[in-house]
Image (cartoon, rainbow, N blue to C red; front, side, top):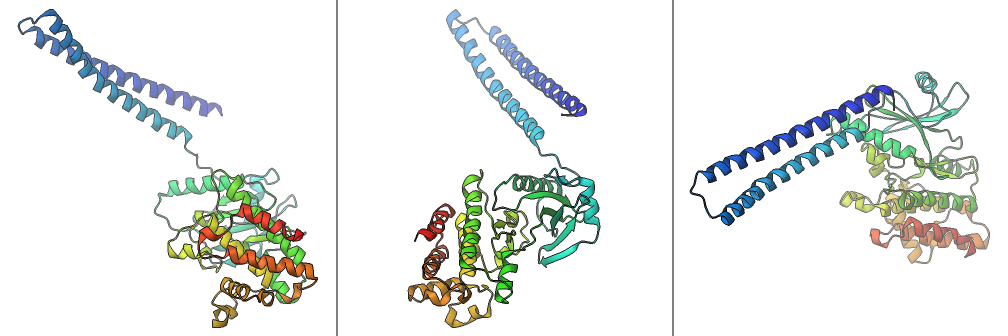
Amino acid sequence: MEEGGRYTLLFCYKQLFTLIWLLVSFFCYTAAYCQEKTTRHISSQPPPPKFQNGLKRILLSIALGAPTGLLGAFLFALIVRSFVRYLNRTPLLKGPVIFSPKIAPKTLQAALANENHLLGSSSNGKYYRTVLDNGLIIAVKTLEPFQSGSPEKSLKRKIQQELETLASLRHRNLMSLRAYVREPGGGVSLVYDYVPTGSLDDVMHRVRDNQLQLGWEVRLRIAVGVVKGLQYLHFDCDPQILHYNLKPTNVMLDAEFEPRLADCGLAKLMPCLDGATSGYSAPECFLNCRYTDKSDVFSFGMVLGVLLTGRNPTDPFFREPASGGSLGQWLRHLQQAGEAREALDTSILGEEGEEDEMLMAVKIAVVCLSDSPADRPSSDELVHMLTQLHSF
């Protein structure tokens, strides 16, 4: 702690103990004064028997001392609690908040001030690629400001605490938050490692346009990596962290197609994010606005369905009666009819063993897409289910 901070803390402690001493002295004086008046009143009466007089004094002392002591203890506890809360309050940090030794605040500010390469945009912000002075390539996501009923400082402190929690996450299948910068207008810029392959959504677009071949082994590895990231959030983090907005645009792929989940928990932090309208949200999110780890599992089922079928849930095909109205309903209908093979992406149909694995994966996706959260497996169970497919 800096010298000035130590003196400030010592001063606060002195003030606290002075206030406590004054309060205790006041209550002791009040109790003594009341007891003295009572004693004088009693002494003005005809002297009672010695035993009765002593008993009355004891009872009066208890009657006056107990409430005074309880009140003093309550006020003391209240003061200490308020003081501890004040000391533990998260200070609002100014300027860029850096979580990586490779990034310097001035270098980051200079890079953000320059013209950067736009990677994409959505209803909640834009994605950029920029290069720092030391040659490090980073990805920057700008989040638009949003309205909230919380006071401004309280809201900023909440955002800061949540982002610091997200920056502490360490897993090979999660995108690590390297820094963030508050914008003057109330928005936030988030800094991540740049992943040149892009998102799963980008890759699947290239697959549909016959610009890229993505075999079943790679797709299964992507699915396993995604669910391992969820397993870490759901079971290894304390308190538990929910993704809230799992979809192909938030699954980044490195050069070896190893998936890394992005935007973990941001939909909770930034209500303006378009998670509920992405087509990947569980039905309970619309019915009663309730979100649990099983809601993340539903979104994973949609991602697994995309990997298996190659289709986008927003495809016009799913607005036709024959599809049942959604990717999940379509997969469920074909699986129950014993025609799940018709749902598979023809570009990945190959050896018989792989086809059996894909048909088993369809069953897993259908279970994940159950309407009732209780019928869906946990992310921990899904890791075992998917990793066992090769031994099927």
